[in-house]
Length: 482
Ligand code: GLN
Image (cartoon, rainbow, N blue to C red):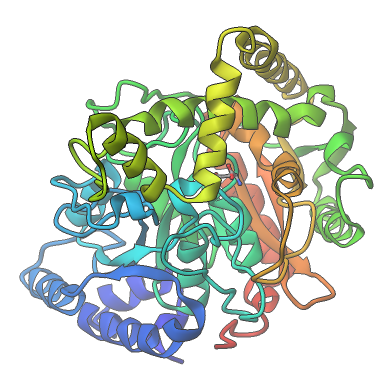
């Protein structure tokens, strides 16, 4: 077995007992990148000093330092998470030559633990999309079958972990962008509760909804990376700690709105149910629940996230940083041309939608109504957590689609119905592989809990991982088709 095929937890053990070095792991991963990258396209920028960084970590370890379990482990970073001195583009022409002067807090955590950054992964432009096909650079392909999409927007991060081009990865999740690509690539993706991980250095799309999230081959791997990056950051005023009573039972709420056959394909519903039945044989109690506002979750999400995007992306005006048009005659024309040339179609669509829902006359009808509906959804979810410990749903209503499938914007938007509720309510949510669709690609099941009850999610997911015999089977044996 090559070193890139192991989990982070296994490699950590091997490093601690001297069975391999960080330099050997980094070498194997870099060779794997050379081999798989032409077909997969997981990265935008590679970290040129990865091998040197790994040697430095080995030296530190030999001197007795670096006790952290993730020291020496290669980790990919989504390209909307700032890395000092390494280009951070958000997969946009607008930031195609932007080099941040500082590290995001999560990246700072990786460095302090002695983890190795492999590079910056491809994504949908400004994290808007579900297929990593709105990137200015290239489309990312699913390593399990490169005719298929890796999902998005963190498709590069998911593909990198799936293909062994990194051992772990950071992504960002505004409406499902960690969980959906994780499900497409047969790996584990975790979106933390709102405020559980610092957003400092994450380039904003819709700040009231998004979080940096983690991806790995196993639940334990995702948990290890989450533990590392969830350190308190006094410079993010939105950080908060929640706690929840421990619950020894496992009552799983099954919301009928997210299993509705008009929304979810038979394949995805069946795969989720078979996972739930397996947990039931182990003592979990399944209860059907109803959360009526879930039906509107995608509508609410697209109004609020676009409104925030239109305001956040106003800063890209060609003046201080970002693309500046060379063909402008005056100041007004410079703003217009810089933004016209710098942003792709999907980003422009969101900015226009967001500007519209905030404009006079539409604000009450759309934006304020969406906020009110979001509050009602939160109340409904709070109420169901009185009778269940976690809520389960398919991660995505349909199996992975082909890499260049033409889909209307509204079809893509409505397919986010299963992932966006956790963002609207600030809940932690985890996607784990639970089966394969007819096309041979993996599908995932999603578990959500109240904020502060992350341990319940990790415990339930680990239990399922154990009962189903591990997730590698859903990636197709070892999971390396490229
Ligand atoms: N697909 C969603 C969107 O396009 C999710 C994006 C995300 O989580 N960053 O907005």
